[in-house]
Length: 372
View 1 (tube, rainbow, N blue to C red):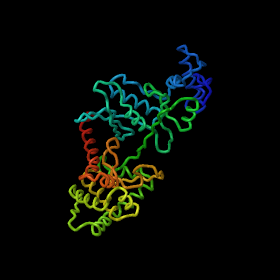
View 2 (cartoon, rainbow, N blue to C red):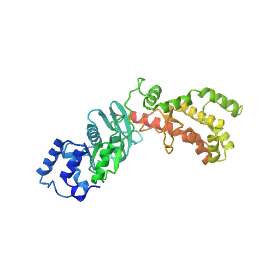
View 3 (cartoon, rainbow, N blue to C red):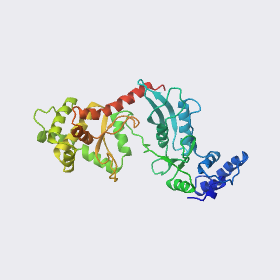
View 4 (cartoon, one colour):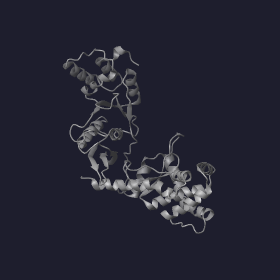
């Protein structure tokens, strides 16, 4: 932590230059602006947060206002454009719209380098000028350079209202913390900048997009799961299902499968033991549940490899709705079975999987509500 004597405008400017956040020319302009309104450049500030306005005077960063100056849509657009400007031209934002669908659900839409991005939003009323901070933070996170650029957006002030933000490397952020700034929030989402060649919105587009942005091991694991799908399900049907099982991937067939699963496993522990032992019935049930979802709604299999053992829903095949990430969340056929044997309620599999259809429906409603 820096000494209290360093918490001056001049000291802050020196830190910005030393960390490579600003040039000497930029800080000279900022200090001149501060001096021009009668501020003492060597005055000690007990709270370093009070120094962050200098960032704006230097022509750096952007500010998250307490509320939009005009209407909400304009407020979001101005904020996103200011954040994108920090990246230096590699991120272009356009087509910003605050969308309200037929059910009254609101979404923030914009394009990052041509790709549509959606985030759900909540506001107190149609006339409110207060932004949804969760939506704001998520949207800011979408504007990091990504790829091999390690920088993220950091909030400098302790309070989000009227806070100043900078695009920083982890080392620069650590340097500002050592100076005494809190930096309570940092955001940086997974960037998808590669463009599929398939027609947008089609199943082929979503599958190609996944492969373009997945690492090599994730692609290998997904291929290893999908390639034997037909043969594996045929073996499962022959070896483990009764002759009268309705093997048609229908919602009704899930009800029959539920009874078989509940008869076989008396709880999550038994199910997990079977999974750990490589039980063929369990593996086949996971496949069948996922393949049934594919026939009920527009969705696809995905896989995300991770070396982090604590990463939730990594290293297993998942089902993802064919919808932008703001609507879609992956569902786990394995966990659908877990929930079934834990709750032991009828229609549990379909109820768990129904979030896939809900995501697709929500996306379609939002598209219909767009005015541009």
